[in-house]
Image (cartoon, rainbow, N blue to C red; front, side):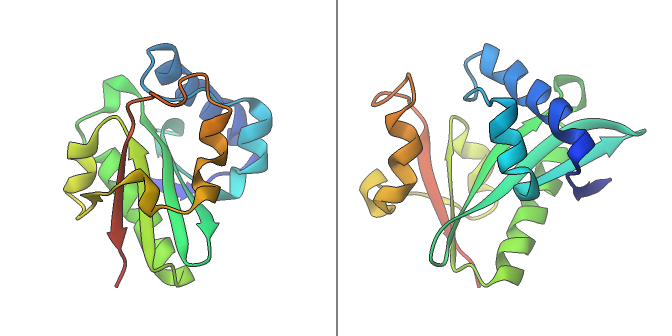
Amino acid sequence: MITKAKLEDAKEIQKLINAYAKKDLMLPKSIVDIYERLRDFYVYRHKDKLVGVCALSISWGDLAEIRSLAVEKRHSGRGIGKELVEACLAEAKELGVKRVFTLTYIPKFFRKFGFKIVKRDSLPHKVWTECINCPKFPDCGEVPLAKNIK
């Protein structure tokens, strides 16, 4: 079941994200990062256990980012990631967001939702402020994709 994240979810969100970060598949998040963006997160629970997360973060004007998508390995392939992304896209539409982007190592997954690869410089400079502080900058390998919301 998908719900918005609550305070008690913060440590589990961090644990799930950082499990992927240890495998170099995501960027690590501090607990401060999680708390500061907690309202951006959706969580997926299976039998009262948090097994998936995804966030929609407003970036600039009518632009938002889908970020921090992670599903516990043993629960992958069950459509949880799809449901989480769909929840974020529905919220984006409700908020009046015109364009959603993501930076990912798995562009094929996001193409299923109508995202298309875009040039990095087509996104506002504000998007890259986090990238400058990343240890992988400038060669992280994440692919930028975007989708217009109707």
